[in-house]
Image (cartoon, rainbow, N blue to C red; front, side, top):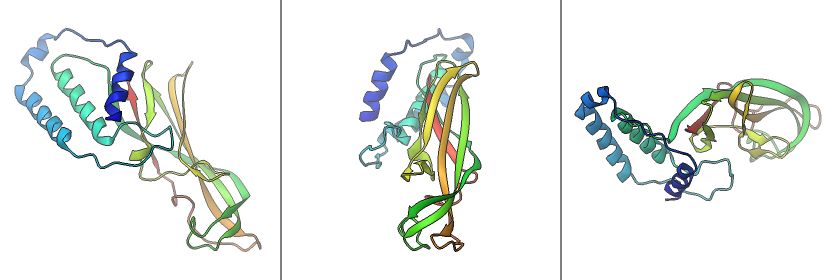
Amino acid sequence: MVAIMLLASTSCSKQQDIAEPNSSSLTTSVKDVSALQTQLESLTKTKVTESGAITDMSKPFITGIDVKRLNLMNQINKLGGVHIMGWNGPFSITGNIRQIASNQEIFISNTESPTLASGIYFVDVYVITAEVTLPADAIAKLELALMPKYGYSNWTQKIKGVLYNQSVGPTGNVVFMSTYSLLPRYNSAGQQVSAPAIPAGNLTGMQFVYSYFQ
């Protein structure tokens, strides 16, 4: 219900562009539209099981099911020769990983890394980034709930999440996303340790998931 209210308020702030049906739309197969409508009705009846309080304002206010429903609605409208504004996606893009610091002192608990005893460790810091260029008038949204794994938005305080920023400039309408990973290397006694990166293991090849409104 929250998702529907958000969409309603968002769409009111933009002018809809409704085109006249063209000649090709008149010959659109009725079966194609019917099949999409059947899928839409099925999703409408699907019980949403996603729950939990929203503690991170970067999280979407729309469920994965809502996104699929919107995509189907857009497909149906396009087959009818009508273009409406709405959500596009979700899309994914593989991030690039690189090391940005080494021998950083930080406390790691046994809960965070089960193979290590709680204590001070020296870690290497990695950042995973991705950049996406969107249509000029599009507004981006990070689909954090659809990402199977990600790192820290703030590695010094070990806050899980993804940083993202949208800016319009000479290079276009660009969204920049990043997240951090810590690899333990030595304990406080200077002994080398072998443990997975935290908070989610090796993030090489990790994919960012996003949608945009246009």
